[in-house]
Amino acid sequence: MIRLVKNIAAAAVFALSSSVAFAQQGSMEVYLTGYSYWDNTPPGSTAIARPVIHRGAGGVGTYADPITLAVGHSKAGGRSTMDFPAGTRFYLPNLKRYAIVEDLCGDGPTPQYGPCHSGKNGRPWIDIYVDGRNVGRGASDQCMRKITGFQEAIINPARGYPVIAGALSESGCRTR
Picture (cartoon, rainbow, N blue to C red):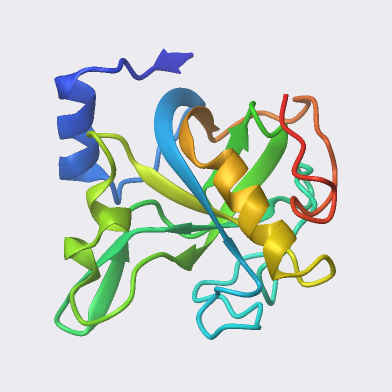
């Protein structure tokens, strides 16, 4: 298994080739944040920019139904290039959930200058959908605060990792 080390070389690889798909399972440290039904773009919706298996943000975190992830992107010539291609799967051991890239993080004409694309402390930034429409804005905000931080992520994970199935906010935002 490829192990991406936490050093300047790994940060440089991310910065230079973040839009290249990883073919093998690998582990990396990411900066994880959350977005909800309440603060999605547009607010109060499940709209996503790059649907792969869902028509709107969602998922329960299993391999078959991973939770939607938003990633940074850059714009040039009217086209967006995602930091990780749509359809890239991750497993987040701290959340015990699988996730899939289906959305963009960062708005405006130059999202490449925002934090989602730039990452945090040289680590990729990924933004997981916590849902929250059935538990309200307060519960989803609390869940987003709870999960925000540096975490291990497995890119292109195999099937079979332990899972706590359910939308993050609706299932109590449980972590390990």
